[in-house]
Image (cartoon, rainbow, N blue to C red):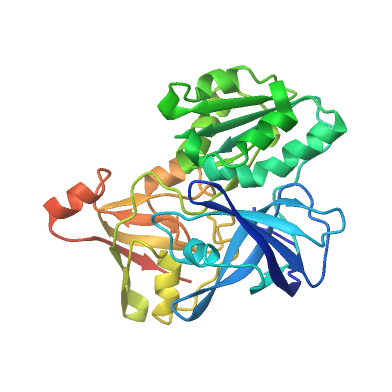
Length: 336
């Protein structure tokens, strides 16, 4: 769901930066209007890309009780649209425009048991929840999965704090996470909170449904930029407005349409709220659905898409097919 908080913007000063894993930087901010950050909260902030301001969202990793110090961690993604690259240039003393902490991934206190699942940089949305549950003496398990150990932020600190409550799964060390085993171990009264790549989250959702576990007990937050296939350039057409725009691999369809002067409705920019939905009128290629708004049936129908995160690809095989086809995918849409 999209955040329903009122955005209170403020100035913040960078007071500390530190690399906590390969291409992951911890950034500590001192806000002008401090407010306590609840578990699962995030900050919206403005980054500068090619001289223009763009809004991005980052989960709060930790904060002081009074909110006078707020930490986020940013992955410098190889396919970044520019926001993470900008964030990695920040130095102590730099100023940012940020919101007070916003909440759309709340932790419900009082469940008999918790499973917290973090995939890669998705840990940033989960780590504060684990800390709170530890302090409360709750029955919880923190599951942290990644491709390589070098890409796992805060791992030594997590081991020290959570001990046997921490389960670590690392693909290239032969201990990859088994989603069927994980979901199979969950009892119906447990709540599972997860954040990570779309493939991991989709696998968990499927397994959860197959076991007929209570739907309200599965809670998640998305990246908004992870998909099934590598992003490639494609073309979007809006016949009613006589608009055709190229969508580079590093930008979203929503951004490309905005650049072309199309007035778009949106909110979360993470494929959760559905406000940026567009109708698919014609398609040369396939849709890489990166949202969690549509059901599996709706995604297979390919009649609409969330343009803030979903993309067109030449075929499910991605870039290799692009060269064979001789041109980019083309999606023709209708907008409200």
